[in-house]
Length: 112
Image 1 (cartoon, rainbow, N blue to C red):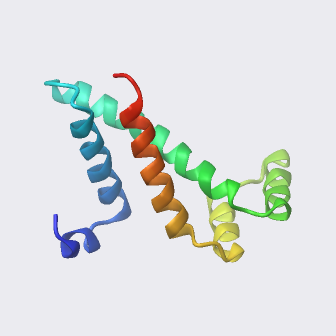
Image 2: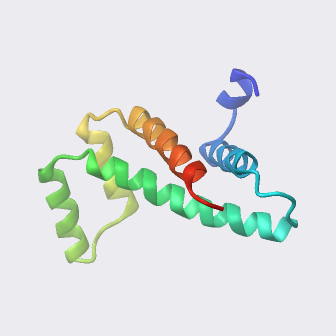
């Protein structure tokens, strides 16, 4: 896939392509579309948790305390967390790419 095609993808399309590539690399053999879709959905859920954890672990204790307070008050929203990540000054793209690489390594090292 060329760089232009990647640049024109949405985040969701990029992640789907990444996850489909992992399934191919894992070499799980032939499977029907339903099974493949189930595996991809499970992988997407684990991937999202992995990346989100990496991003949260990169935040300061102060920001994590703010997020915890919102969780305790049951007023947390995805938008609030995104705002805090954006305000933190961290390189979220770099952290995400590093998490993707680590997720790939971990997934491919696991038994089928």
